[in-house]
Image (cartoon, rainbow, N blue to C red; front, side):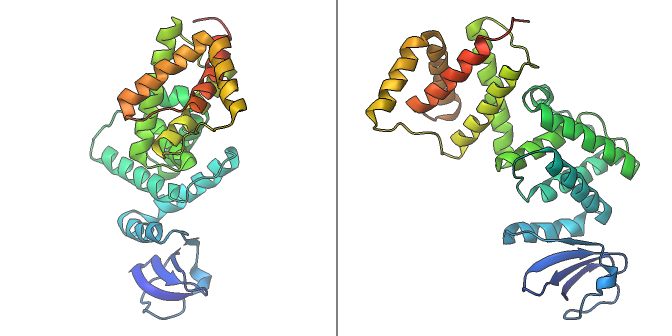
Length: 284
């Protein structure tokens, strides 16, 4: 590795043997170093690299703005998160979560408090991620000796979900609001409140998460020309009339909220999940 730029005494921008830019941290690793010199690998504590060049540049900007221990802590948190979740996580989670943690600590030091209006929705619709957010919050407070409030768990959870769904944070917030609106519509339609802890409700929310993601990424299921598929959709609409009508109400809501149309295929998927969640358990 060779030095490309000295960020500070403890952080370097370097170039590895493949010519890729990386961020290298270590106590005193940048002290009196010059461009082109070899990196003293005995001082290397952490190496950070992003596949995406734009994200790598953002990472370089971030390490100039936040303490190195915030970045190192975030990497440890993400390692734990990866071990708990099965899917892939967008590599930008390191950037977004480290930035959020550092900003949250600065806010607290300045006496600025933030509420998360989606806290209840996050707790209900992303329980696994919310639990991880709580774990991360405990670790942050323990390792950095701070006392960030409980609401930060929901913010951290949103970052995790965002990395899972590979969306932008603004989209993640809109997706959560859309899910909240759909569930309110469904509960109104069936005149009941669903058990948030039930397996069927959890499955329904998971479906809504990926359904909303498809909406925002314009990858919703399209109707095929196959006669058998068309016949199956008609069968579902006829035999599950009540639930299919609820799915049509959801389609109307989505059209009004997002300006997007749902295919017959998506209506069928929704109907199947609605039948399952509406037919299980008792109302609260």
